[in-house]
Image 1 (cartoon, rainbow, N blue to C red):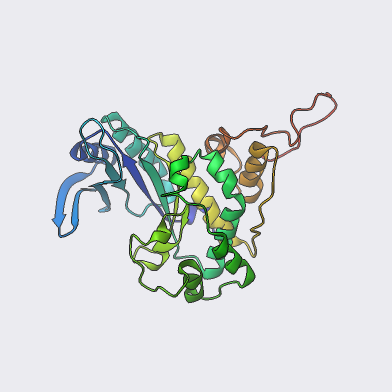
Image 2 (cartoon, one colour):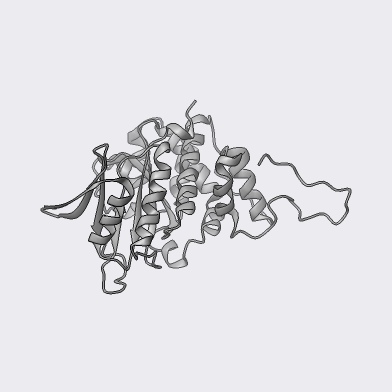
Length: 305
């Protein structure tokens, strides 16, 4: 069975308010790397090579507002593994200390390697996300303007196709996603602007992208977001089926916590901080399904912490 710890991922962290070279220097300090600048046609970035030879790229991002006279930057990690999460957190802390900030126009995008995935497992991932997407939007406090532009909800038509006729080939999944077979999609294809983005599956990077996350330079939150995406990917790989039917709830915090613990396996101390960050903004009570009992004899519903 697949595990969370063996999944590969990458992160894009958008920041504002600091010059690109200062952000690059902060990344270099965090990873003990060397700063170089790369200029190629259509590509202008500052690259930091870490001791393992991996490249951390810092490039300008025109979608980010100009803050303190500086254009926004995007920190793009190399391919990372689970043991790199503490290093990623140190990068976040160093970037924050150089004066950069997570402006409202910033976001965090997390890419999960689709190498281990099949069309069937990616279909399960899509259905799991769709079923819980309303809770995900609320839990992550996705800004309303982003929901209609850069982080749109999953398309019901795509989910209906996946549910009615399970795609057993990559071509069929591709047809469902784009509406027609598109083997070589453009980087900025309009389909990419969904909270769960499959566009990169058919590009050279071979990932599925989670775009639900508002900009942040909080190391604990970014760790939580990475663990959440890895857990979703792992569950999709290990499951035989997944439901896409949304279930109404009057206790969002309880339902979301149970989903994290019982379904995605995010239990125990390793995911304690993640559960906190992923449920803290939801209304309700995480321990009692129908609210804290008034009768002392009543016991809370038990869920594994």
